[in-house]
Length: 86
Image 1 (tube, rainbow, N blue to C red):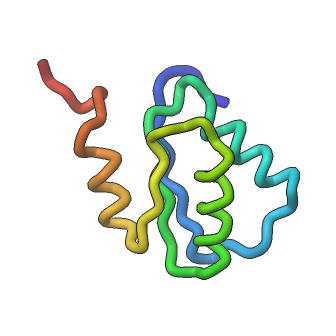
Image 2: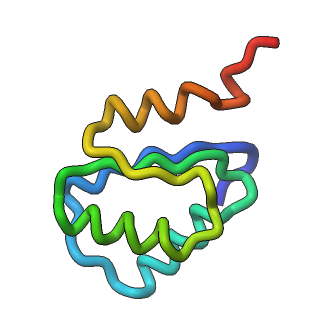
C-alpha cells in the first residue's frame, strides 16, 4: 500500500485468469482508505468478468469499468479533489 491519496488506472487488456488470492488482493487494494477512484478498462472478455467480480464484492463506491483508456482517465480527472485549485 502507499501513503497518501491515490487513484488506480487498471489496464486489463492483456489480463488472463486470476487466482482467488489475486482477486482478494485486488479487492483489498481497492478498498484501502487512501484510494479515491479506481478506473478499470479493457476490451478483453476476461477483463470484464474480473472487473464485474471486484465491483460486485468491494465496498468501494468510486470504481468503474470502461472500454477505452481515455474514458477511464477522463473519469479519474473530472472530479478528483486533488485537482481542485481552490
